[in-house]
Length: 441
Ligand SMILES: Nc1ncnc2c1ncn2[C@@H]1O[C@H](COP(=O)(O)OP(=O)(O)O)[C@@H](O)[C@H]1O
Ligand SMILES: CC(=O)OP(=O)(O)O
Ligand SMILES: [Mg+2]
Image (tube, rainbow, N blue to C red):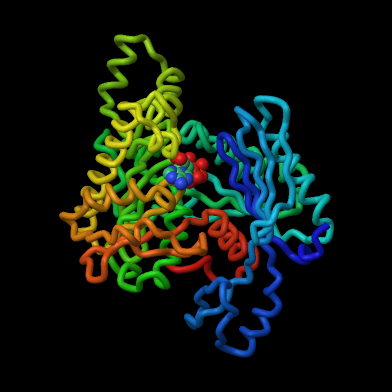
């Protein structure tokens, strides 16, 4: 048992199609913070969260990551690994099978935490849920009724929503009195203007919920809360944020709020992704139905699992493998990926009426210097003047933001490492304690 892990905690679950991730945040500083709040304004210890109070005084949010545990490769080679916040190992396991059901992965994570850390008390569990539909523009405490409504959104996010809801269902049964908070990828985009929301389809379909929602909102919201410290100019300015991971999207931020995004009704619209196509002419789908007899399930497999970087290259969905490959199709896939990103930035810059900043985040955005360089070069016309040495040189600390453009570049570019789990923890804390907002804006 680790003696450091005692007291009150929030657990955050991010369950995807091939992995279940669990982060444990301690609230060790909560009493300390309350005492400080009672005494008036004060600086928090370095490295701790800040949030605005009613008087807009900066106070630390008492959330400290203590442990991260995940089961990955659920459909290929299941592997469990847990680490303390300082990176030191806390546990690992391999299963001698090719496939492990999600429920078994969840049970393993729960048993691990319960056995290793018997002294902790749980304030609640926060969950990343991809789709909140039109009903949820804010995080919500999940009741059986809320869960039933979220189930109706499964067809809108078939790759994500069923996996997001499975741990909630399990936790509601196992611990009916422990609050479960659902935090939605769609919620951050609810500020988009009316003109950005519809497809040009009959309005009855819009009323029935067939409209643009946008995703990766917890990631963009996290970036938005970091911006005031990274660049006050960008916090108030016109910014395009690029979430380049397995899922890929772009978001237009004006003064830190979403006004446009490349993803729409589902998380398949927009940019090419690891295995998802991004936007295709809807006529292609009609053609495939008519001429190749494809039905909805076959099209779903095509669009979600067989396309994107994997489908174009025939090599891999993993950007590292494509960048290391000599295969002409791998290069072509990377060229198409960059081309589409640059075009999307142009479209979102038009939405914003100009561009002050570009943000890169998630696996590719944070680690693939060559992709960043090529995207920045494609944005020279928008005033992006890269500092190529800076682009190649990440800072020592993996969670620190760093600038990619030369001093005086009219449009700044930055890497800001994302942290969707911390954003979920902030929302969960704020909702369950009624203590402050989750962070600006
Ligand atoms: N050092 C790297 N260079 C290039 N690409 C990388 C690097 N590290 C990770 N990636 C890419 O990041 C992508 C995964 O992003 P990530 O944000 O971890 O995905 P997710 O959380 O959605 O599963 C993969 O395409 C992977 O190849
Ligand atoms: C919404 C989405 O695409 O999520 P992810 O990147 O986790 O697949
Ligand atoms: Mg992701």
